[in-house]
Image (tube, rainbow, N blue to C red):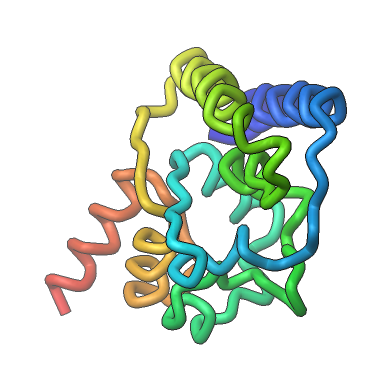
Amino acid sequence: MRGAAFEALEAVYRDLAAELARLGPECWSSGNCCRFEKAGHRLYTTPLELEYLRAKTGFRGADRGKLAEGSCPFLREGRCGVRDHRMLGCRIYYCDPRYAPHMAGVYERFHARVKEVMREHGVPYEYFDYLGRMREMSLVNGVPGGFTREARKTRKGTEESR
């Protein structure tokens, strides 16, 4: 899942950055983008994006306490601790009300591109709740590990045999 798929994903992220620069939303550093339950929203992502985050960060600094409170485990002092490697949903979320009318359309266009990258690189498409998956992984093996269905099946099988 690495190599060319990650490069293609990074190209999508670069194009998104250019689109956001054109639209000009402001980040207010409120941390609402990372405090999912408090802000009343959910972050959905794909296996490719989550594997990219894991590959780039090793999940170093993941805070299980933040998961328990419904926040991103990488939230640090109101800011994203993995900003350069965050998922599409994180990249498009801004509190700026001037940007709100654009957010859904921007997400849909770029999510379609992520799906296309996955298809082109043979990555099975799955769309799941980020916090739910992170909680599942932290319970299984302390967070690090693969995110593909096969890796989860392997971990599940290993747990059942214990």
